[in-house]
Amino acid sequence: MDTDVVTLFFALLATSAQVIVVAAIVLWLGSKASPSLDRAKRSVLDVIGPQALSMAAVVALVCTLGSLYLSEVAHFPPCELCWYQRIAMYPNVVVLGVAAVRKDFGARLTGAILAGIGACTSIWHLLVERYPDLGSGSCDPTNPCSIKWVEEFGYLTIPGMALSGFALILVLLAAARPVSLEEQP
Amino acid sequence: MTSPKNPGAASSKNGAAIWIGVGVVIVVLGIAAIFFARGSGSDEVDGQTGKVSVGDTTSGGGEGDTASDTAGGSSLPQYDATLAEDPAVGMTIPTVTGKDFEGNDLTISGDDGKAKVILFVAHWCPHCQKEVPMLKEHLDESPMPDDVELLTVSTSVKPGADNYPPQEWLDREGWAAPVLADDEDSSVARAYGLSAFPYFVIVDADGKVVARASGELTADQFDAAVAAAQG
Image 1: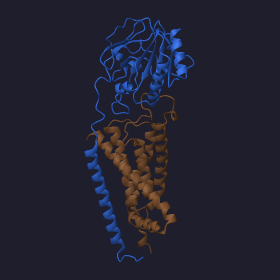
Image 2: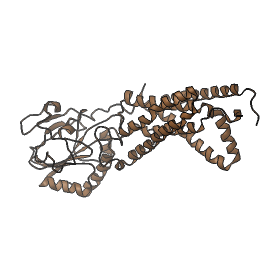
Image 3: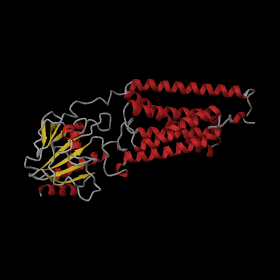
Image 4: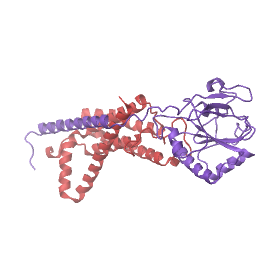
């Protein structure tokens, strides 16, 4: 399949993730001030909460497969910072996948720490892309972190997509709970 | 708030609905990607890289040898900015022959009697993207002296990367200096010991390396490089 189609698909997924993350943050902040938003938040958690751990595992899997596609099929070699993000994302497929199957909600913390480290690395990578002088005063000819292999919608690069994935995993892990609030005794 | 009569069934029903919804969204996004993906932006544009020959003027290595054939004797050692003394200083530059983006022959040689500053750029390198317009503006105000030539080598071309193709980029910037299109193996860059972008090789009128530098130069540093080439 054409690389442009696949990268646009990843960008659309990342944009959807960003919309969900922003909506979740707005809902969470709004629930502090508005009783109606608080009720809305509880309703969303009731529906999403029991599935959130599995969803986080799926997000990690999609991000992992996407990253492998970009390096192994599209031949965009991962730079040093890309590798750090991979180190944070790939294990989450196993950690969250096993946790989802075993309904082990205690694994949320491990997943969140990995996703948090990955998100911080993505933010730094985005800064290096935007402000290359943060990295160094010159470009490594082999594989600099400042190179943009993909840029969709004028702003979304590979670390931006990774950050979207990490952020969505964090939101889903925050929402994850064993049973819906309505079903709790 | 009332509890459902069968909590497990309600949760299961909700879960199924969520996963179906997620699946539908993914399929819709996939279809949207197929329909809205712009034409392949990663197709190679002809002429952005070219066949080059690297030879050694001092040993009579001659043109026509490939970089891999002549790597060693004629090539400059890789530039290491941390060294106090650059071992390439005093060495004769390797003669390289190739073509510019229009397909015209272009040779960079140390035996033409002209001092020169050779600038190596990569289209995807953000430091090069800053350096080229800065130098363009500087050269508009204070052109190169007649006895020093400014030459450019476009190298490390990556068709899938940002700011491709290099020809369009340099045209857009109004870059007037001759540009040699390096080959896909970056043979010219390797022969000149490039280790980072942007990369400068300052050469005197005898074809000997006076200095090398990597990273962005300021206008004053560039002027100093030109003065060093003049001797």
